[in-house]
Image (cartoon, rainbow, N blue to C red; front, top):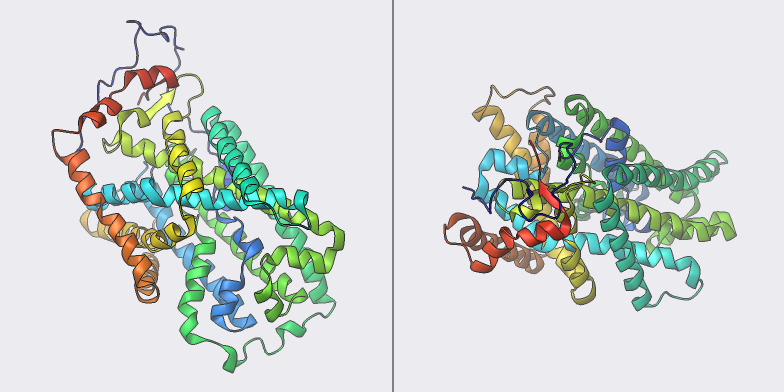
Amino acid sequence: MSFNFGEKDPLNSNGDPHAGAPEEKVELRKKVTLLRGISIIIGTIIGAGIFISPKGILKNSGSVGMSLVVWIACGILSLFGALSYAELGTCIKKSGGHYTYILEAFGPQVAFVRLWVDMIAIRPAGLAVIALAFGRYILEPIFMPCGVPEIAIKLATTIGITMVMYLNSMSVSWTARIQIFLTFSKLLAMAIIIVPGLYQLFKGETKNFENAFEVNTIDLTGLPLAFYSGMYAYAGWFYLNFVTEEVENPERTVPLAICISMVIVMICYTLTNVAYYTVMSAEELLASNAVAVTFAEKLMGNFSFAVPVFVALSCFGSMNGCLFAISRMFYVASREGQLPEVLSMIHIRRHTPLPAVIVLYPITLLILFLGDIYSLLNFMSFLRWLFIGVAVVGLIYLRYTRPDMPRPFKVPIFIPAVFSFTCFFMVFLSLYSDPINTGIGFAISLTGIPAYFIFIHFERKPKWFQKLSGQRSLQIILEVVPAEH
C-alpha cells in the first residue's frame, strides 16, 4: 500500500522561480556503460580491508594454505550471489537493489523493514566507517612516524564525506569518471604489492608456504568465522543492481559487468595474499595492524609512505560507489511511496537525484561524532546477510510464482540455493557467536514494523511527516522536480 505525498506535477510558472526551466526531459540518464559498471563494482568491493587486515581469515582458518582456500571459496560463493543478482537485475529492470527485489517478491511490509534499517543505521554507519579509514590513511604520511590525532581524523573524514556528497550531487558523469580513475588506482596499488611479491616467490621465497596445510594447525571450529570475514571482504558485488535504470543495455551489461568484476577481484585478492606470505610469516601478518604498510616497509623501504595514500584513495572510491548506489535505493523507495516524495525528485539542470544523495549526510555526521560506529556495525552486519539471503530466496520464489516473467539471463537453481543457504548460515553463526549484539540489531530492525504502520499503512500520518513530504519550499531550495517517465 502506498500513498501520494503531494501533486506529481512539475513546478510551473505560478509563482515559481524556475519558470524558465529547460525543455529537455528531467530524468536519470542511462550513463552507466560496461566500463563504468565494472568500476562501480570493483571500486566498491575493494575498500581498505585487503590492505589492512586479511589477518581475520588467517587467524580463524589456522594455516596459510587454508586461508588461501577460504579466500578462493568466498570469492566463488560471492560469485554465486552476484550471478543470482544478475538474473534479478535483468528480469526486474528497476533500480533499488535488495529493496526492489524484496518488494517484488514479498511485498511492501518486508521491503520497508529492510529500507528502515538501512536508512537509520546500516548505511550511515557503514559510510562513516569507510570515511574514518579514509581520514586516518590520508593523514598518515603527514604525521609519520607519530600517530594521527583523533580530531584531525574526524575533520578529514568530514571533508571526505562532504566531497563525495558534493560530487554525487553535481554530475552522474563525473561521479562515474572519478570512480573509474579510483578503481584503476586501487588495481595499481594491488599490482604494486602483487608484482614484487610474485617476483620474490619466483626467486624461491617459499619458506612461509612450507607445511601450509599442516593438519594440527587447521582450526575447524574457526572456519565459519573465517568465511564470515571473507564474505565481508567481497561484499559490494550487488551495487550495480541499485542503478539498473541508468545502465546502458542492462540485459547484457549487468551480467557481464558482474562476472568480469568478480573474476578480477578474486584473482587480485588471492594473489595479494600470496604476495604478503612471500615476505611475512603467519606470525608477522597476525601481529601487523596494517598488512600492506608492513609489506611495503619490508620490501620497498622509503616508498612505503605511498601505501597509506593508495589505501585512502581506495576508501574514497568505496565511499563514492556506495553513495552513488544507495541514493538510488532511496530514490526508488520514494517513488514507491515509502519515503517522502521529495527524495524521488531530480535536479532540473544536473539530472542527479540530489535529495536522495544528501539525505544520509546529517545522520552520517551525527554517528561519526556521537555514535559508537563499530558496535552499531556489529549489530547490523548479520542483518545485511539476512536481507541479501531473503532477496535471493525471492529469486527462487519468483521462479515458481511468476514462471512467465522474461528472464534474459538465467542461472541454474542450485546457485541461488547454495548462496541463500550460506547467507542464513552466517546469520545463524552471528546468533551463536554474538547473541547480545545480534539481538540488539534484531530489535532495531523490529522497530521498522510500527514505523511501517505509522508512516505507510495508516491513512492519518503525523503532521510533521505530511509537512516534510509535501514541502514545496524544499523543492524550490534544492531546484528539483519530479522525474518524467
